[in-house]
Length: 447
Ligand code: ATP
Ligand code: MG
Image (cartoon, rainbow, N blue to C red; front, side, top):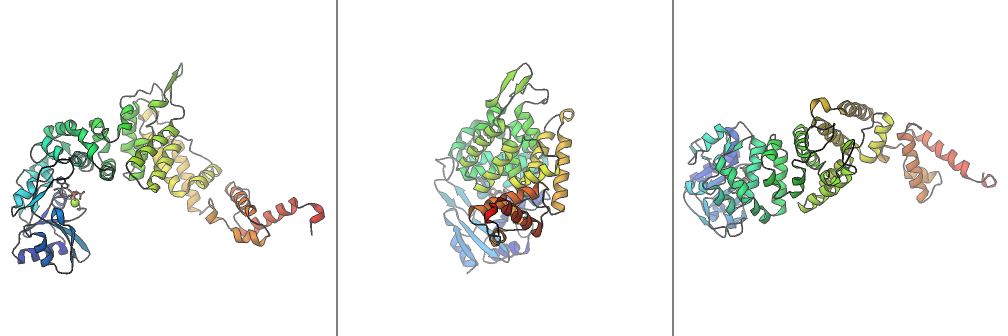
């Protein structure tokens, strides 16, 4: 395994001072899978104050209560944590106390899954007391110890398990899977921010759809809004899947990016409560707006930032609108949504269509046609926002316009340019405004 130079240096210095030091967790797991680790974590027999003394001036006590010291080495910030065992957990979240230990094995036994409970030292020697390597090979997630006990200690592990299953494409060992289901109620103890982070990683995983299909009730413990979709028949010749199955197919077809995956997960979440039926079949009138409302409530509860919430709810609200297939239509949509959101909307609509059975993908050609026009317009640097308009407020003031007149004139001009009625050229635009002003001035006042 290739340990980066700065991490190697940290291990060397700790050893030189007589301490044991190992890379642990994800940075052992990921390289064994041929993946690049997110971050490098070091576990050591050194007590926090001993670690601080080994790295004077570049070690910071970032989590002393849990034995964590952050060490800066080159461009790296590495968390160096004292071997520890956790005391009892009264709240399914935090250990009541932690005890430092000089034993690596004890430290590994407090970790969540066997594949996360391996350590490697400077010389590349692997410590793997719980069969992590075998489970990596078999692509299995298995709790270290008794699943129910481990999920009971810290319910976040339930979501971590589903997240790793989604991102790595691993299956969940049977006892561990039972533990997930039996302990899901404890998820209500977990802070919204932590739920948000795990759910987002889960949704962006390559196997997100499979995980959601297998564990809807577990995810539903933190996202109850999805549950009415499960098994909800659409009674429509345009759909061969129920709402949930369609959502999962669409999710699998969407790019692995947070805004898009959240938007696709929630795009039809309002369908069950909009359902009506007549002789022509099932209908879901108004479902995009209802879905957007539900999405807004979900994202608020999970304490998402405003920009993400705004993006996701806009995409959900727009997902069912017909994609414009004329240049004028695309320009108008661009004026309302802007380039980024339009591109995202194309992705959501593409996924929505791909989420239908192949013979029912009726609108895919329309989506692709709209995407082509969008690309062509953007490549041409076409004007669709005030920022790009060839005149600004100051130009109009020079023309003698004042206050609200200016805003109104800008609106008029951008609409005319977007609709192709005027070229986006300063002289032409000012000329048009001058002519309009002239026409509106009573004859006796004209100079
Ligand atoms: P990634 O960094 O890719 O998200 P990771 O496995 O490295 O995955 P971290 O959150 O960085 O996850 O944690 C590092 C290690 O700490 C884990 O591999 C695991 O051994 C242990 N760990 C983290 N969170 C928990 C937890 N809630 N319960 C038990 N062990 C945990
Ligand atoms: Mg990590």
